[in-house]
Length: 81
Image (cartoon, rainbow, N blue to C red; front, side):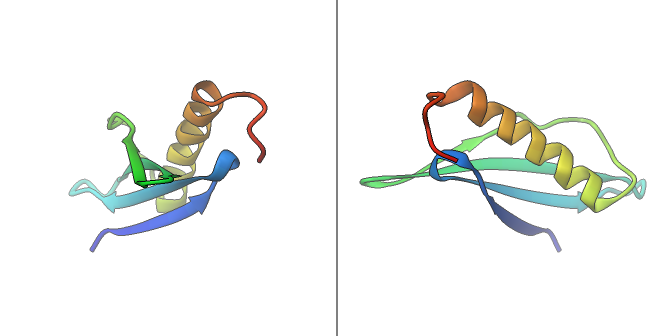
């Protein structure tokens, strides 16, 4: 079963990461960046990476780094943490 974990991020964003063990025993993960708006929730799915990892935490940390980088590059620099 794939469990989606949610982590807080700067600017009121949340990062949702789902990691999954592949048939070869390696781990992969996907990420959705979530932003609450006055009328609902905006979901930004990052492109799926083909990188595989030995452990679930490695896969999650890789995706968290990608998501934080996306937020940094795509939001105003004055947005509070």
